[in-house]
Image (cartoon, rainbow over all chains, first blue to last red):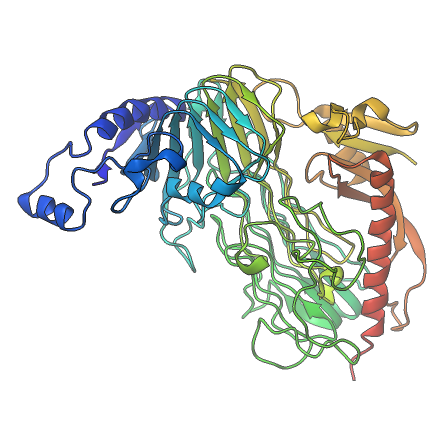
Length: 459
Length: 129
């Protein structure tokens, strides 16, 4: 049975050390705690009673994992840091050194629950951890944060990532619940601020001709803000306004604002009634595109989920690209690159589909169905030993669509970068951290996401 | 024209094959800038802030380059005719740390090609009926 254990700690490092002790206790005493007879009966019927949930070492030799419902997650509860409620958590405890190669990849999901937006994923490996080149360690759903704590050297030759896994903790839209942002004390001298970089402000233009936007901001040790939507009044009109990006928080980077690209723009945009072009705060939805049709396509900002698209005809479905004028048929995204990094693309194609299975050039990995959903989260790697290997740690923001993605028009705002905080026995060396905000792509893209924070410290 | 290479001491940038030791083989004409100050605080260095001020853009990540590229200045003019004039514009382009300096140079060319193609596609979409 999963035990409930509320954690009160001065900082995140202390919390993980407390949980390490608790994890060792509950691992050897799986039935510890107070239960009613009904709970025990229920546990026996579901084959969960008297079971040690955490694996002892490698899954291959994991006889305890072969019967009944097994998971590494043995604790859950509330997490208080420095007296402030930081959200709920699920804690996985792996007893012994672990080495994963390519064939082990899917089994890492044993570390995580499907509690979305409201929970941290806290993982402890009571030994060393070694990952091979194709291992990607990333929670399957959005989390308030992901802490991977090893009790020895972590040789990371693969990827550890919170790209696309920032929580929508706004309590709105597809959020699974609200959690108030607080300053996250990681250890003495390192604090993740409650508010990350500012979102790019609405871009207002009264003169036609130029394609402008505002990028997201940065914050020391914080996540990046989302960019504003592209604002492009093309030929004639009075005033056009794109949607604002949202600020980052301690749990997620900021989402992007919606775009506007109009031949005759009149007075239209985010400051007009009926438009919802600003991104939702606290990792919420990206802003929608402007509510007026145009010759051009107009895209919503990236976020949880991405904002609605406005095509170029009168179709009322906001996710439909529409007729795209006389020359371009509505079509799904063009698929380009591959790999974790948005910059790794298949260079054989400048426009149009590439030859190989891949994903849209501009989108970050981790988004459902390769869309533009997702914000960057916060990744903490605590190594009580040496952080080494040739892999990488990621918490990158995604872009929005551009013309080379099959988007014939203006791009919405990009998502900011997240936080990667690595504590080990050295403040340098080892796999690098990548916290880049969503790149603009071309002159018709939305505002870039603010860069996140790559933090190194001693454990 | 100034060309800046912005990095955050990513380990790949000093590694040899299969990497390209980018920091050890910086071509002439490029200025290399550390994005973050040293220490446990992830704050942006004064040198990086100066580049943001000079270029009027935000450095959205590392490693990256900040360069001036020659792009179309718009889609249509006030008469609705296609814009064919070009001008220099500061751009921040993310860099693949696994790539070479040739790849970086090519990324500048590719960026302009994509931007030109986008421009042409938007022109081809015509005018309102």
